[in-house]
Image (cartoon, rainbow, N blue to C red; front, side, top):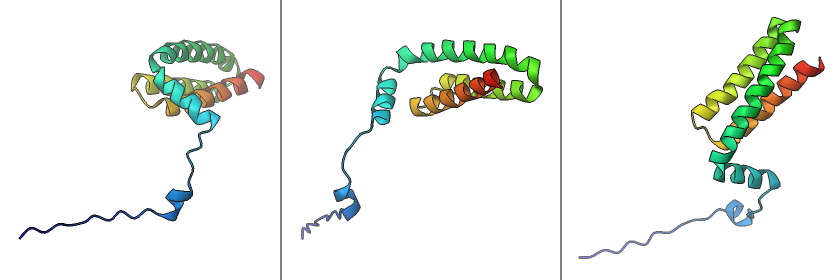
Length: 106
């Protein structure tokens, strides 16, 4: 005897109502991922130089600022070396940039 089984797929109403709208941020992150080998050297150079300048300012102020600059800049470099997703690298770059600006301003 041959038995035929029919598989039934249930689609939730949430999936039906969800549209495929992409935001500008997700398009930008997708383009970063597509051009990864072009942006990685740029990110490394910019974040290392900016982190070094911020560290020069931070060493005159306090050890806490120096530690914050060193940790955030090193975290970006570690993510690049570990070939992390570009979304995570971009978030870490923004965080490191904000910390560096904080050191420059205060």
